Length: 186
Figure 1 (spheres, rainbow, N blue to C red):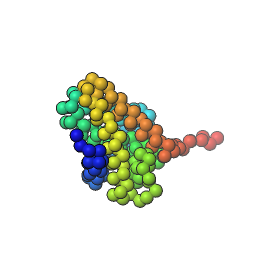
Figure 2 (figure 1 turned 120 degrees about the vertical axis):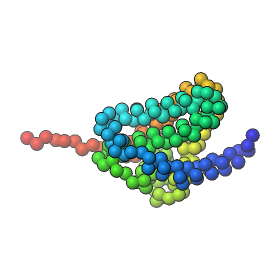
Figure 3 (figure 1 turned 30 degrees about the vertical axis):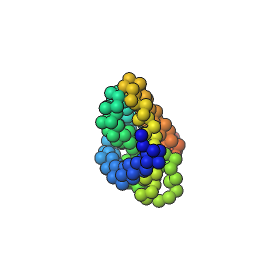
Figure 4 (figure 1 turned 180 degrees about the vertical axis):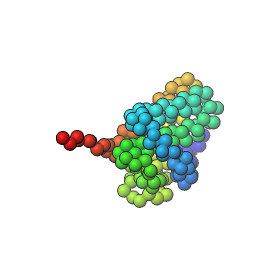
């Protein structure tokens, strides 16, 4: 069993790697035009629900087979969960601004703020590390519960679904949605 201090150090190392490489790669692989089309077709709330169900699916899969599935599936689950959260954040930004093109820096500022990370600072390596560390801490607490196959599947799917739904509410609060209202002229 690793001492608590070592676990904390391991989380910081993983968060640093995720912030340096992972977030940018995930962001770059998301087709922002498809996010726009999804919001235009489904509406914002149905799009968010779709992303939450996609996240829940990977949570169910990674939690369903006990420790073996968890060890193999957890990295895929984490990447999918982050991807769905990024898609939801982009959808809310598009819905509010009317523009679907978002820069990585602007995007990470909103993600950081939605995770209750201090976003008053310019987007730097430190802010991305804080976001990564916060995500790893939230996701890591669930990993131990996923050891029991059936319970793990339910917990994994439910936790992912709730995470996406709560994060979407947090982003909505930060990015107050104010669609222009068309007033007909007589």
